[in-house]
Image 1 (cartoon, rainbow, N blue to C red):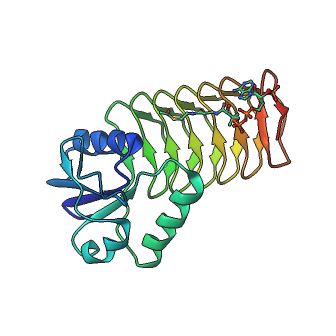
Image 2 (cartoon, rainbow, N blue to C red):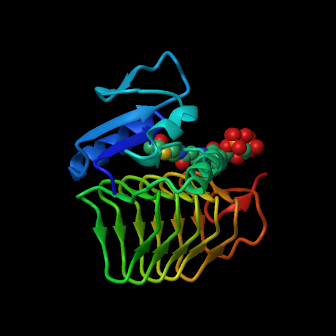
Length: 206
Ligand SMILES: CC(=O)SCCNC(=O)CCNC(=O)[C@H](O)C(C)(C)COP(=O)(O)OP(=O)(O)OC[C@H]1O[C@@H](n2cnc3c(N)ncnc32)[C@H](O)[C@@H]1OP(=O)(O)O
């Protein structure tokens, strides 16, 4: 771990990620990289270059990819990983993490998140504000669990999936890779085909 942090992506999501990093109090400097030249600061923190510039900073900074889109976040993360960048886990002090929970690099737990025991969260995930992930879950890489989502016990979520705001996943359900679950949806059975699912209980719309 380094004493400076560069956040890639000075968006609304990046702003919340920076807020968490500052709350954690582990870095003496926090700054951004962003590809929009019009954005020069975010949350009062400087944008010091574009995402292409990251190699210049690699020896001195930790890096965190704060890009909401799962596919883009994965691409940028993998570029950093291939150069052995130091990529932390960010956990808001107001999140609760149970025993025997494994959280991989590049994942953020926002305020009010609860992860119960024996759960594994993959790399590059977003556990957004107030979401809960219960016991014995397996969450793949680059998953976005939106604000207010609830996953009951023994749920599996495949890599790259996005659970929309306020959705609910019943216990013992598996969701395959690359799924989009709509806002407010309820999943009560396994989902084995990629697509967009909405409603209560969910139906596939795309
Ligand atoms: C901090 C943050 O902000 S984190 C970000 C959180 N954001 C989210 O969670 C966004 C979740 N996104 C959604 O719910 C979106 O509506 C999606 C992804 C499910 C669908 O979006 P699109 O692919 O653009 O589909 P589209 O809007 O064309 O809708 C397709 C159909 O599904 C319906 N539909 C879309 N979303 C929902 C939903 N959440 N619940 C019920 N029905 C829905 C539409 O009314 C439409 O029905 P119709 O064909 O009968 O008219």
